Length: 199
Ligand code: OGA
Ligand code: MN
Image 1: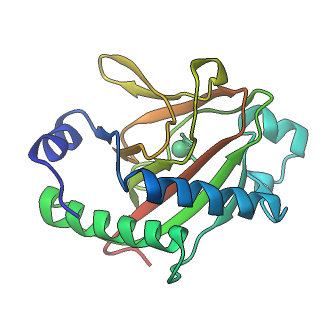
Image 2: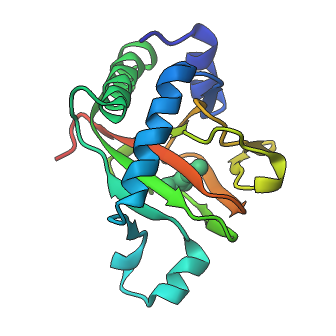
């Protein structure tokens, strides 16, 4: 995988870049199908339940359901894992970010207004999460479905639609962001890259 100069430049100056097509449509549709099947298994957990607060209170902050995706061969989700590994290597080589391992999470927003309040993925000095990369697997996403990713930039906000095969990459300690209420089921696969010195 190769990063374009303008992508590396944007990450350094603005803290993010997006790419409209990461894997190509056939692989993106296969990711969508496998992720949808994982959701249908019923094994995803409400996000944020470990916070210890009661679940009603948590869904006011964050209404998605999550599971983790591991390295595996012969599947579309495994292929996405490999693509994220390549992205991490390219970011280290091209953007001098010194990234090590990453975690890959599948998140399902069931619709019905599920959202995720404005937050940072990492607090400077408190975490080794350096880069967040989000891949969307939503065919036929329409404006009335909501569910935009809102990035808080220095000069205003940028709303990104979670359309099939879109990739968004940003610096975890720098960009606050939120998920606006989703009115249709919404799938996101998020990789968090840790610094090379992380445990
Ligand atoms: C997250 C997050 C954004 C999205 O899981 O931390 O901010 O667009 N997700 O799903
Ligand atoms: Mn986040």
